[in-house]
Length: 262
Image (cartoon, rainbow, N blue to C red; front, side, top):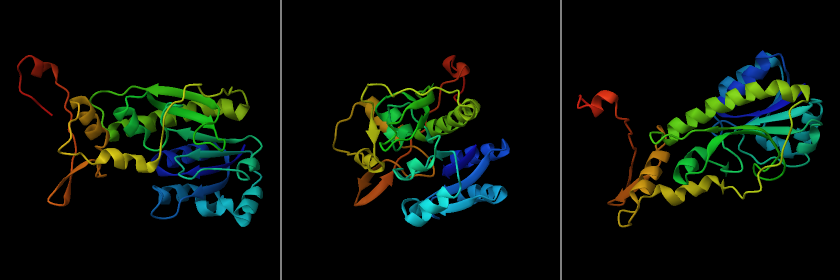
């Protein structure tokens, strides 16, 4: 197949590189501009190797950008951690549709920061490969897999688990997609959950005068622990003091009275 990829971050780079290594025809690449995307240099290095056209995200809704994409004669678009909503007429350019690799167990945690909300709201965590429609992560599911959230997980460790699980799911599923043998199913009738990027602001400030359940407070702190991001904070003398939570699992020798270790 001829593919247009919309890639961002480490996972987007890895999927793009894997597709290129499999001999897929990368006809076009859409990226976020400097300062808005991650791993841009690595992603563009793959693009140079494949010789595909590269467009910034702002162009895909313009007549000029759409015409360049139409000239790619691509069969399918593959989106990975791309931050923009995709709508018609872009979606209509690809006869075999547009698919998205989302690090959440849909219909839970549509939108942003699924690694955070799976911890804070105790919703199922996982990864989903699905078709894109004009809703926010509401398209038909191709494949998905649940990821276990341990009590020792932070937002950072869970994010890494989701990255690796998503890459494995994509690699395992792609041959069937390419061959046209992979079924698609509607998302569960359950309402699920959805979050915007700005929603974390409602949990990031820890109010020193408020009463929290211990579990809820710990979950907020560990969900927002993701070096090098700042995350949750308290205010003191007009300044923010940022918080990180360290979670250390007791080892067998410690349970028997041995010396604790990190």
